[in-house]
Each structure stands twice: as structure tokens, then as C-alpha cells.
Amino acid sequence: MSELRNEWEQLAVQDMIHGIQNDIETSLEELIKGTDIDSEKVEFLIWDGINELNLEWSYEANSAYLDADKVLSYVEDVILIEQCKDLPLLIDRKWSCDKTQAMYEQKLKGVPDGQGIASPGR
Image 1 (cartoon, helix red, strand yellow):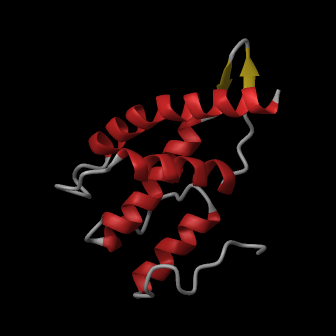
Image 2 (cartoon, helix red, strand yellow):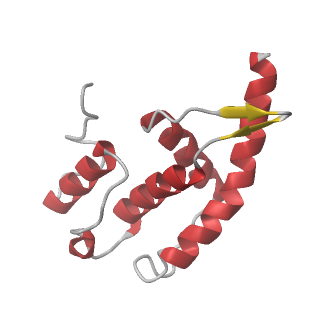
């Protein structure tokens, strides 16, 4: 049964990738002009967001579902932190979780990626 659920989850994530890419390119285009977001990056961020936000899958018939809006917020946060050239513009943004807020604060201070950033409680 777990193998079948994993397959359903994979299919759900594949469906989310295109939608999230379109949403990001539309909603963030002013902040990340000329940036192309590839599907492998989006897929990685979706799985990372699911884990970081502790999202639970729901299963119906032969499909898996979860709150795609929460995943979208997480993916947008990370892409903005990585790609936005003018970080002070994001000062009033409501971040999707403590991890992305910490990533933003560290990057704003000029700390290189991955250094000094730890998830709360870890």
C-alpha cells in the first residue's frame, strides 16, 4: 500500500510543478525579472516544502492530495530569497515558515547561502 501511495504522491507533485511554475512566473515576475525557473528546481522545492511544513497527504480513490497553496508559498519564498536582486523590497513579506524567514534574514545580512541558517529546533 505504501508503494502505491508513493506513486500517487509522485503523480500529484508532477501535476503541481507546472501550476506552481506558472504561478511563480506570474506573481513574482516584477521581483525576479528574466529568471527562468526550471521544473527540477521546482520539484525539489515542493518536496522540501512538504517536509519543512510537515504537510500531510490525503488519499481518495486513486489519488493523493495536499494543501498546494502552502507548498506554493514555500517555493515562492525560497525562489525570492535566491533570485530577488533587491532584498529590502521583501522586508514586509509574510514568510511561509521559520526556515524561510531565517534564510531571508541571513541573506539580507550578507551571510553566504547555507552558512548560519538552521531550522528552529534542530
